[in-house]
Length: 129
Length: 131
Length: 267
Picture 1: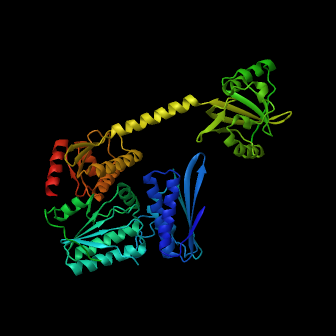
Picture 2: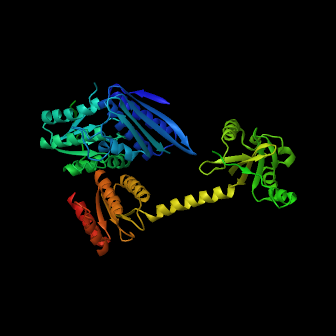
């Protein structure tokens, strides 16, 4: 498992580059590699922007013969108060295009999110080969 | 901090976005373009994103905003080199980017702006690196 | 809570039952809780080239290629501690190896049974070599069909026609989008004519896929024209409230081609 602490902006590039490299090593198609790396970029950026403390975990998984990659985005940030609201397209918290969560969800095969206000957020995405 | 080099060919500014552009460079992209537009009185800008394999929402916003501010400064702008995968990913992210002009390659991009690349015999092309 | 079969007291004679076991058209191996083979039927012997006597007393791993043996021991021990009826090999590729070292794909079923002498596992084994081959052929045919069913034809300089025939589900739309964009980039099409004469029906999701495709074409710097629109489809589009925006549409391919040439002239 690769763990990348998100401390400065360059870590976002690092995280998505690691995800892409792992996908490449696992034989993912160009389209799927790009989707995964883009989703990682979006979610890692969230950690950078909104949480003070966070990391990205990337590793391969197997389930019933299927091979895939799971990425976890764990932070001790402010948490999300209304998860349903941020998962709707068009929601925007100020200048940015929202948290980019609906987009990341569309790019992944599986998406799950847990968040507690004041405690942090835990997002997990899976991309199957 | 390394800036993205800006080339000038006649009245057109060219920028090539590097492969693993980080956020800081992306931010300075817009500033560089606007600065050079004013300094050189260029009429048009071509941004080549062929090397960009991954375009996330941040990058998309930078491109979008650069395009908007360029137009406000009364210059035309075209983005060249969108790859099929980047296009599909952008749409899946929900970003239509309907406000930017794109072209598949440099030549088409210049045509879109209203320019033609001409080879001159016995003359050299006037290419200046402005930054 | 596992439910285990109990070997029943049957009216059928033991000899007959043993024949059923021995001659069944599927491989059956009986193993104990330590993974030791206590019996094997004729089918198993014929597909593995072992004599029955060579198998009895051996661990089941003897039937697996060496590289899988270590991992299988763990799986076996896990199974014994939580026994259940199970079919394996559905989503993964299982392989067996014969006495002579030939590997072949198999499907396996497991059923634990409480016998007088202790826990026994009934293991069924089928050689699925032929099945895998025909699966492969089917997949190849199906992808060939996909290729053929959405050809991308260059009809004019910088103009391509994509006839969309049949149904357009999410998977097909995805493939269509990828192929069209890649072809567009390779061949430098300026205008792509999407002809939906052969489209079997249009609903919200099909409309969404089509519009998504035109957005993709536009985002890559191209133009699209939608042709082959029947009166039915035209009515449905309006009724669905689909917003076509700037998209040029027409009922016939030839009118569409005219639009395409106009677009080329203007740009």
